[in-house]
Length: 167
Image (cartoon, rainbow, N blue to C red):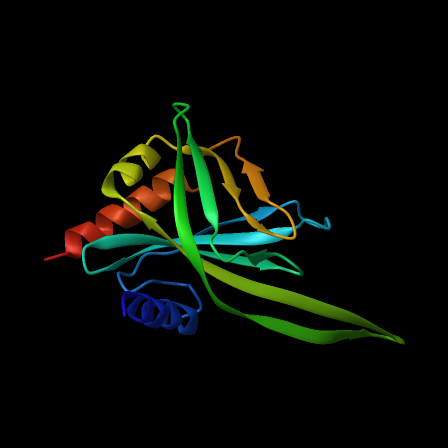
């Protein structure tokens, strides 16, 4: 039942295009290895169901998908490493052709989503910044290292905003 409620919240997020969550926060995203075979766009957003907080991760790639029980490891700027365990949600695919003169270029994008449960203590760790993210996916593990924090502080701020609206 909890999974169905969470899927309903995530579907609302998808309908909104992940441009804003129910608490009016914006997703955090980055592009990994642009113009490479491993290239993808990752988006992160925080949501809450009952008293449990979740991080919704969306991967937009030509072939990346979440496994049945994905794990996300995060390393903070202070060197601490913690693991989040999640579950995948049904994604969707886009396929179309780009016509340029006499040529047609096929384009295919796979939108895969997963939800990871996070504790308030883990959000507190994110406050100092995230320097590395490693997510188990198919056909390979997504591993991204940041020179500057792009997702830690924004996810922590989303958590605080959702927590402030909690009653």
